[in-house]
Length: 401
Ligand SMILES: C[S@@+](CC[C@H](N)C(=O)[O-])C[C@H]1O[C@@H](n2cnc3c(N)ncnc32)[C@H](O)[C@@H]1O
Image (cartoon, rainbow, N blue to C red; front, side):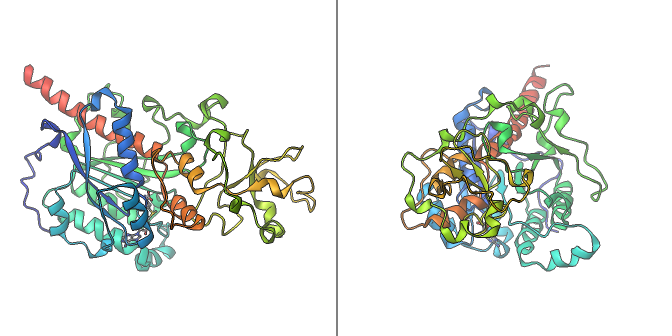
């Protein structure tokens, strides 16, 4: 393994420069969810982070559709279609990035013996394993890495390998499972997140609020990971402490003049499986998790909206018992899918995010369903960079002693 940096000397810290510009790479960029989250960190403007700027030095995704949407929204950055498994150490080092953000494609998620072979042979794992190998070989590593994935990723072999590489490269990590509803958005989307910060940059005082999140690295990589489920210091509330007033009604996320093409086709609502649709009203404060299969499959792909009057009882499918006449009071002309822009609002994309005209509704659903909740990601970035800033302040103070 090639390593040229002197391991004893902390790397030069970009936060010490007057510009405080963090160069970042967004791997598996999709529509640029992590880039929007970084914009949100800057806009939220916590005083600890004042003056901090983020510059995207590379964004990668092999999908042509993602390229069109990404470049429409994140000019002047161009998205590279180069498959991640083709990246070389030289290319990654050339970017001189101090932050890596990534949402690798979902993996087959079991560490159980019977599934191990399948995961390693699965093409979707190849690029992420390659990225881990690159990280192992870089002469200088970024000070912060954030990863998002589906819940269950933490039990995968890919995750074990990622953990091992992070430990070898002197990172300390914390892991979270968080939901948009914990940050005031009416959507369920539990996702797994890893936050890794170079040990050189973690100088937490024992009583600092961040200290409890960074558990001591375990020598046993196969040990169960400790997963945190709240960050109250950053307004990420515990699930059991969320009340109605924390989450706005869906009516605040809706388009003024919804596209008539969003109506639910007869061939869909006449299916027996239509009973599984999760139907919500503008008065409600919840939607189920939207996936890339939204509009394509009925079961478990996301909520549909009902704007009709009447006494139709709207409860989540798992709380109902099948009744052949379940929709007799439902006026199907008042039921529709959410639009791509409504989903983008629920995911807290930037206000100026837009789909190019050439992108169909189905493609919009797929892209947002694959993306991440920007507000949750922004809180985790803020967490990581406040840890980084604290380390600098502590270093500065100790010089005065
Ligand atoms: C889970 S999505 C990430 C979405 C992204 N976080 C966003 O905000 O839209 C995974 C993305 O990785 C891309 N992808 C999958 N395998 C890839 C590879 N080997 N090289 C480059 N991109 C890849 C897919 O096209 C997809 O857009």
